[in-house]
Length: 283
Image (cartoon, helix red, strand yellow):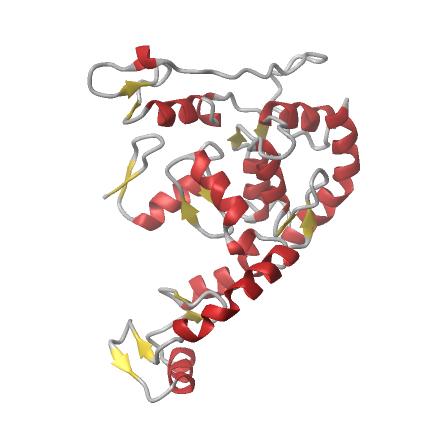
């Protein structure tokens, strides 16, 4: 059984756990890398430092700094899945490309269970270029939702996720993506919480809202200031699934899970909204 550390649900497989976390905007999951993190702090560090999320200039600097180490990291002609050695790398690559036992992605050096899984992976944003620029800091990303997540995280000019939510609601997008409970003209409050040692219950630090426990005070503070206890702010116009953050809704649309739009439509729509969004964010 696979356990979700964010909401304590159990799943029969790791794939089911990842699918669950991918659909939850309040779970620290990197859609591009298909990777789950234990905290939003870890996710934010990953977004800033991982090579796959670097801008072109940062990637070039990283590559040049790593050139001296290339000789010591030479790949060996060994297939782990088949426990088999090959004469050279060319023979190994031919094996990976033609063997029915493998569904190998040569860009990621990763094997997939089925040809369908490989096809889905190959057409996913993980193989896209860094085509989208953050309008605030010029850092580049592979998907529109990655820009939204980057800004919502608070690492870009200290803009909070509440400010992002308010700016998007003010755009009054049609068809509506805002949850109708919002009061016209109301302002979004930016609230930060700080938990003290009084949260210690004798064995662990306990969240007074959901009663989850954490081993450290820092972990509890990260949890209480994450979107875990935010209210639903956005909804998919087609399937009506609700999300706490606009980045979660954007990831849902980008995945084409309910067929509301093709990924290219999401790209075009996001590009057209950037100027309007920036004006609202600066008000």
